[in-house]
Image (cartoon, rainbow, N blue to C red; front, side, top):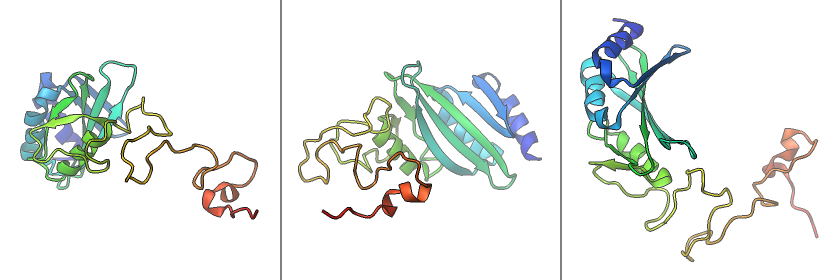
Length: 192
């Protein structure tokens, strides 16, 4: 069976569970309901050889409903086929079942999404923050989070106030200079 045949068969077998099917530039995306994720993911792994979870990402569609999307990138090593599963979640429901029992690498991907977007994964064995400290009240990858950050009450953390957006050592300056000369690491400190 070839990759396209595999994806066609899978689409037929999943039938009504597929809310939307998109094919673009040789890639197939199935949008499913969050409640169908455990069964569909297990079916994809066990019966259709999608043995490799490449990545899990999340998208914040701030201002739209449902607000969040979670995207699972699956790959079949034996058939060299790629499949994208997509779920849509409202801000109120912001929880989806874990797939870390099917693909162990999902553990870290789900923790990162929880930490940065605030989406919970029901049944996850160790759902806690991995990039921000425990008790941090915000989710930095949500679109309403300001670029300069928010003040923190943690004085022992490196930056406890909002970072400036202008003039810092890692901020480029608009000009007609070449890219190399605009790069922050290429700027020499000015002598006073």
